[in-house]
Length: 260
Image (cartoon, rainbow, N blue to C red):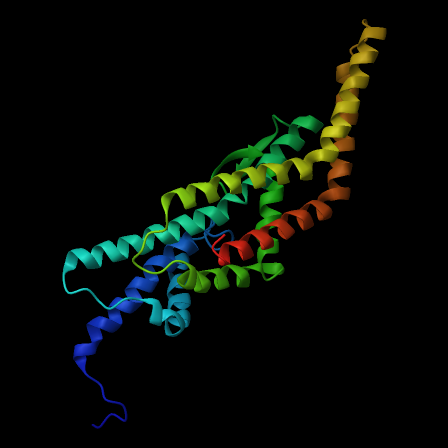
């Protein structure tokens, strides 16, 4: 049988190495990305998604993959470096989701639902109900707003920003991590600011009334009203809160594509 294109089995190991190198970074990033790497998604599904992405983007990024090393040790070092780069980039993007958890905790304390907790599937631990609701809505909107396309673009663009086999500067990564945490905390305060104001006003009023009427248990009377006001305010502002979060998320991932 004659092949229209010259084919040699000697090229097979080099081709396998290219796909293996791309899979190392892609799978690490996909395991950490919001939406793709959620704890509720089975590991086999995550691997399947990673394989599909690898076969899709490898023809585009293969020019950045260095030739296959002759020895085993340099090959293992290169594969390990790709895994580290993928985990680092995925963790930076995942850290932006912490803004929702912080905002959920602040809102819960402000409206009196701090002790109402449930299982958060995105974190795999117990969390406040408000934080869990915000996290579930965020994961849903990631795919509804097509922001998963932005994350897939980040996977491809990472090969232009971070060359395979070369670890990024450690101080640069920690700087990005610190700035990400700081930005997420500021965003959480912005999202929960209305609840902080309402909670401050309510508790100041409760303090004044308790001094004027010490015989009446004002706190137990006002608490149900505080919860009702907080839930109503959450329903009114949740769309604005999610809009602010995804505006920040899109701008952050776009900046990450430029290596910032």
